[in-house]
Image 1: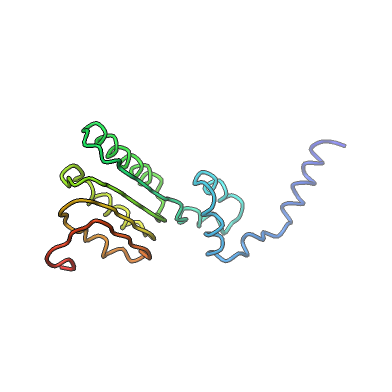
Image 2: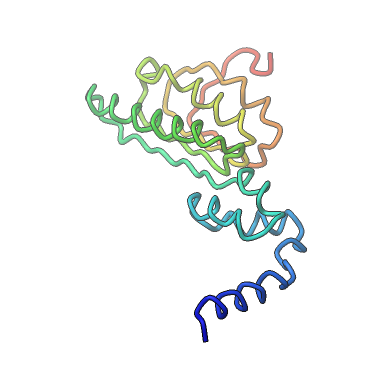
Amino acid sequence: MDSRTGENQERSKYDSAIDLFSLLHEDLVLDILSYLPPRDVARSSVLSKSWHHVWNSIPTENFHFFYDGRRDSNAINNFINSVDDSLQEFRGRQITKIKSFSLCLPIPYAEEFPCLDDWIGLVTHHCIEELQICIDFAMIKFPRAIFQAKSLSVLRLQGFTMRGTVLG
């Protein structure tokens, strides 16, 4: 038997098969795909016609950053660069959702982390579901972007001191 004939028969068997994945509800597809690494999610888009447009809206990103509290400027810069690089990579992949973002900064020096508002603004702009911020700053301006996060379902704040009108 010619190997091409066998390949053609095998291919026609798959071509005539029903695309059962396309019959799944989009929410179920999103849930299934959310368990895969982002690279595999992108690859899976060829498995089904309905998955092709869905894969880039999966909330696969989970960012968890913990700064150990050292006041060493190299350690602080390395931490800031790590967060910036991770978020920059997120921007580059054009994923529209972030599942969770947690940031713990157990130091009382707000001036060391001027990019905090930018980070929170970015994640709240991308349909964040869970946001956790642990800060030991004595006084910090509460990021207003949190109030604009319509998809936020879990908010955990620790260590904030808020004075005056928070809601504006």
